[in-house]
Image 1 (cartoon, rainbow, N blue to C red):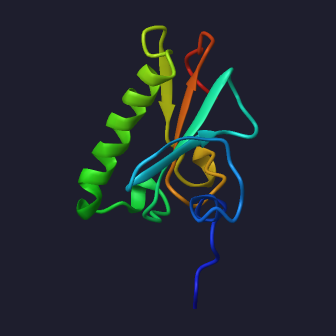
Image 2: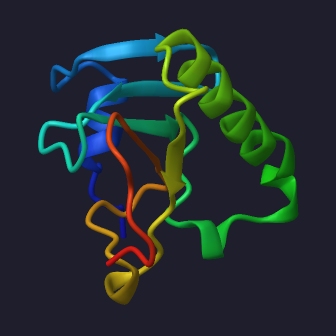
Length: 116
């Protein structure tokens, strides 16, 4: 049985438009269409990994790449010094809405703790 193509896979393949701010051979970063902060970016791997709990040891380099790119994008977008938050939702109770691993980069205001 084939799995349905996710929204993020459609953005990667350009079937659905997005405000893309960064792309390389491994990942894509774009502005969230329903931002939860003044800056709300989504950083996704091009490899379809359903969620962080399903990533394997073969994904170690990719996961490290995503975190390093998140920091690079924060510096590029000039909110690294002010502060930002990286969020990864996993599963329904974790708030996962799209079954494709993604990092939320949130910035532009004071982010409270605890979240949610």
